Structure formats: structure tokens, C-alpha cells
Length: 511
Image (tube, rainbow, N blue to C red; front, side, top):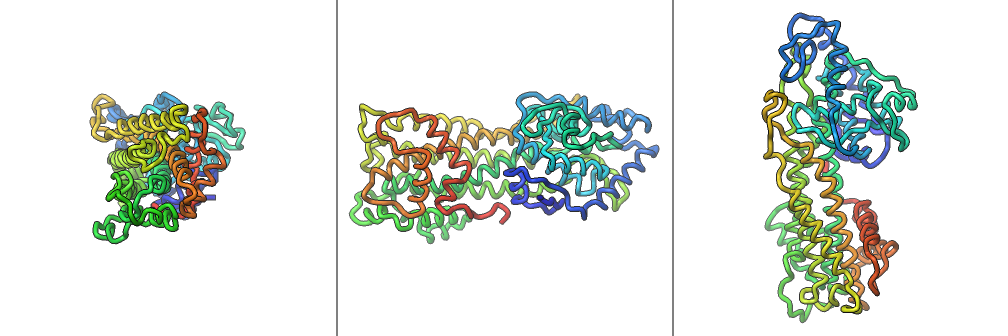
């Protein structure tokens, strides 16, 4: 059971939920605040003053008053009308993370919902009832309206959900889990669909996957360094201390540790005619380390956003007010997603150059062309390298900022939007591309190190190669490589190679 503390939940908590099917619930200590806010909204619903979304229409229709007896219909109509998303369903782990983030937002005690609303989301997470949420339809302002409406529809017994791998109507899924649908009270529909939780869930997914891939890039980069008989001198700690960037220093320290004890490295400390390695070897700390720092900046923003109350209006209980604002605008998430996209693209760009170096006999310091023992008759890793170039370029194109785009919506009422949703959603595919680039780098570097025998690499790198070889044997005569490339990418994404090399305990994003 993962206990979510509104305002104080950590990225580690959220990553644990993302990577597992563990149930999650709010810290019960937040319940009084939730109920005080609900009482304030209930009072407003019976009053004469116009309160947006409580007794008025929505968006451009906010000037239209709604009768008290129509409150439940208003909220239900809001959800059904906003179920207008399109495209494939988002992955179950991302949908669950979206639900958990909505819990955290409601738990701040400013949304005005009944505790029963929170309890139903908790029950769905515990029972594995996951709403089917279409991927497209949010512009990241006024909240992620369409995606969150699809999430909420299941709570009403509408829409579709997945349970035990089976897709079914929402009412059937709730019944299968022993849960009952809700009839929404004042403002509850608005509280559930106003907010940035869909965009934030995808941005966090990109962050969690990207951070693991940054670690993996240091591992595959160390393998490539030894395969190319590169120098460890550029990783000297004093160089990085003089610049002072945290990620750069950490990356250099990791590379030093991974390469320590390599007989390949020791074999060319003296008498090497090369003065300097290419940048893709020499500047790994400056590039991958900078990407790590960028990820940490994005992480700081997303940690705040994950704990934020982002619907509208908000019940300010201490002041006795219900105030319209704009916390639903996902500009911070859009900026964070753009930063993560840049980091993913650059890690892949420098890794791809290392693959290119290893297959090129003019650059690889004595390795055979395309890393095949019989070049000419065999093409070796020639086209695997081309595939990494294609993936790298896809990611570079996807790294163009989304946050600078905007278009007016809802009859110009919502005249500036963040585009955070698809800005964050692209990160999943970018991370998949990067994982495949690093998988190919692991294959080519391991092949290159094999050609250095009888010289051996370090103990951590030898352990990583042994784990790789359990799924992907060395390349002799040409064979189809697609499955092995996917297998190597899976070892990268799962963290199995990191664990083999002793890198499972990397610096935390919470630090």
C-alpha cells in the first residue's frame, strides 16, 4: 500500500506506484480538510450568489445560472459532454498515475468534493479498475478536460474500464470489483476534470524512464569507451570540480567507477599516439551530466505540480471564499516536458555518435569494419547503426518545444493554452527510441570489447556484458538482428544491465 500525503508526496512514492500495481490511498489525516471544503461548497450551492461551476454553466456559458435542483444533472452533463477524447487508450500505468495525482489534488482540501469521491478512486486503484482514457484531446489548459472526463465517467458507471486485462463498460467493471458508481454533488464533476493530472502523469512517466536511461547511457558510454580504447583522463574529478555542475561531476564519477580496473584501459596509458578522443567519448560528463541536471530541474517542477491543487474554482476555507483562478493552466508542466524532451534527444544524439564511431574502422582504433569478424562477406552492425541514426533524428525533431504553441479554444474564453498534454505524451515514444539507441550501443560496445581479447574490461562492465550475452550472443556470421536489438533495449529499459553493473542505486530524483 502506497500512502499519498497531499502536499508532501515524493517522486519516489509516485515512481513506485507507476512501476507497480500496488494500491494507493490518501493519508487519512487530510480528510478533515477535504470535508471542510465540501461543506463550504455545499453552502454555496444553496445560496443566491453566483459561484462558477457550482450554480453556473461552464467556460463561455458561465453567465448562465443553474437552479439548485439541477446541480446533479449539471455535473453529470459536464462529464458526459467532455468525454470527447480520441486516439488509442493510454497505458495502464499512466492512467493509474493520473488517478493517484487526482487523489493528491483533491486531498489538499480546496476542491470541495465529498470524501466518498476520494474513496472511490482509492477503491478503483486497489481493485485494478483502470479507466480507458483516449490519448488525444487536451490542450493543457482549463485542465486536461477530455482525458479526465473519460477517467471520471467510469466513476459514474459510464465509459469503459480495464480490469484483469479485460476491457468492459465502466458499470460492469465497478460491479466486478464490488464498487458502486457515484452521483456527483455540487462542483464534484468540475473538480475531477479541472486539473493537470493527465499531462503531469505523462511528464512524470518521461522523467522516470528518462532518469533510468540517463544512468544506462553512462553504462553503455563506459562500454564504448573501453571498446574504442578511449582515455579516462577526461573524467578526472578535478576537471569537473572546476566547472561545478552537479550532473557533470556525478557522470564523471560514474564513468570512472565503471572503468576502474579495466586491463584494456591500462594497456594504452603509455605510448598511445592519440592525444584526445572524439567528443562523444571525451565529453560524456558534459553532455549526459547536463541532461541529468536538466532532468532534475524538470523533476523539481513536477514534484510541486504532483502535489498541487489545480482545479477551479478553489475553496479557500480559512477565508470562507470560493475563488476562481487559473491553477488548471499547465504551463509549468509544458516547460518541464520541453526540458525533458531536450535531455532525451541529447543523450541519444551523443550515444548514436559512439555507435557510429565503433563501426567505423577509421575511428575505432583497430576494430574491424562494422564489428564483424569477416567484413565484406558480412555487414555486421552496419544497418543497426543506421537504425540508431533514424531514431536519433526522430527524437531531435520531437524535441522542438510544444510550450511556445497556443491556440484559442472555447469561443475565445480560453485564449492561451499550454499544449502540455501532447508535449508530455511524446516523451514516452522518445524514451522508447532512446532505449533502443542505447540497446544497440550495448551490443556494439560489447562486440568491440570482445575483439580486444585477451585484454579484459573492468569487473562492472564484464558483469553487464555477461547479462547482455545471456540474451544476445556475440555476432559472428550475419543474422537477423531485430529481435536482439529489442532484447537489448528491454534490458536497458528494465534496469537489468544497470543492476548487473552495480548501478541500481543511482542518485535519487528526490535529492
